[in-house]
Length: 224
Image (cartoon, rainbow, N blue to C red; front, top):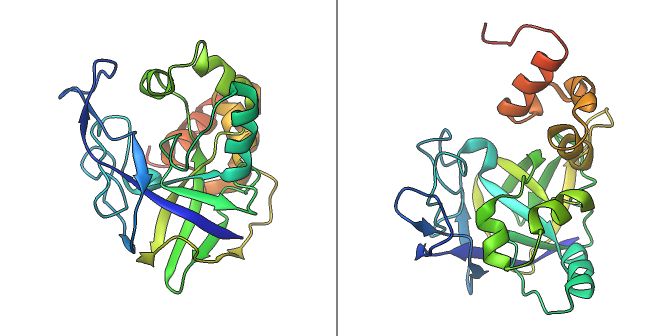
């Protein structure tokens, strides 16, 4: 299991985003050297966990629980075959393009060590949005991506560090539950009846998902 590339995006003005400034950082390209990764701070004020990577709409993206986005090269290869066109590393706006790692099959709360120092924790799957669809310029993309249920994973930073292409990825903790990124994604999109079952992952869940699961299960939110 290893990193094929570490991808960062610069702010770009486009006509297809509803971000306040009309900018997006979704067009990510592989970095040539090492990239520092650290906790960016709470959603709404914190952006990307990667130094030099732009998050332009802080209302919906970035923050501690969405600090890093990973997507498997194997899944990109599958989309290449379906779409009939090449997809470079970073094409889906992912920060980390991985090889040999079942990203959407990872468990919520699973921890990965990348390189010598960085430790990340899986929090949720990526929900497709209008900007993602327009960036790829594929018809009915949000629906197609959702139906595939292989969304890649958002991660929070447990221990900061520098990473680069070629670094090994090691799973250093796998929780004792069966709530995977795929199941969390399905529960958050097309199969809301699965929401109560996500509670087995506890506080490792993205806080927004945890609140939705508690509400669906008829339980009080932790901060109430």
